[in-house]
Length: 245
Image (cartoon, rainbow, N blue to C red):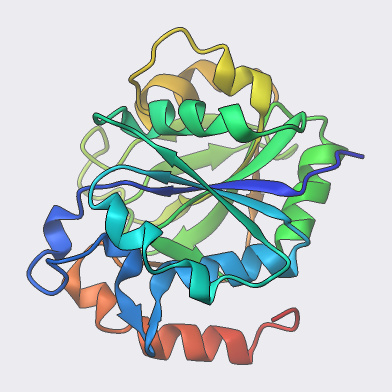
């Protein structure tokens, strides 16, 4: 079984769509019930026995560094990986992976949340002897997420980033929930320093121990004001119905 107790949170995005309501801080620090949004992610990681969390920071990194520690459980060590210039999601993960000591690492987007039992995702990754595992969620509107197709063995056989390459009617299906378990060496060995994991890595993983685990939990992405406005109610409801929180 894989011994995974380290995680990377991607928290360096520009957050341009959310600036009308959160314009003075990194979007992962947007307040939800008087707490930074990212603190709920760290709590979920702590509940999954993650002991080290590496924050992959870039834009407005100081607003995270100065304010997040007080919301971090004592059991979790926070480390900072700061990019001097935008590296893309893949480049940010590769840089942050320098702090990872294990064979595999948990990775999650910092601006979305899904209350799935993360230990079950880790167990799934181990059982499949996967190189890369992705948590999936069902959606009636895939326009903001990668649309994923899996076979009966849970192998990901197609990945479409957003819906720009999909037919307009293709709005329902399985989406990328922004939570992964990945082989650390795979990330470190990628030749480029600046790249996107969605565009540059996922297509190359098709047919190469790339698996998807379907969650029965809902996904919330706070990237737009409409969804950020429901974050407080969403999180309260999800915590109430989630046995492991």
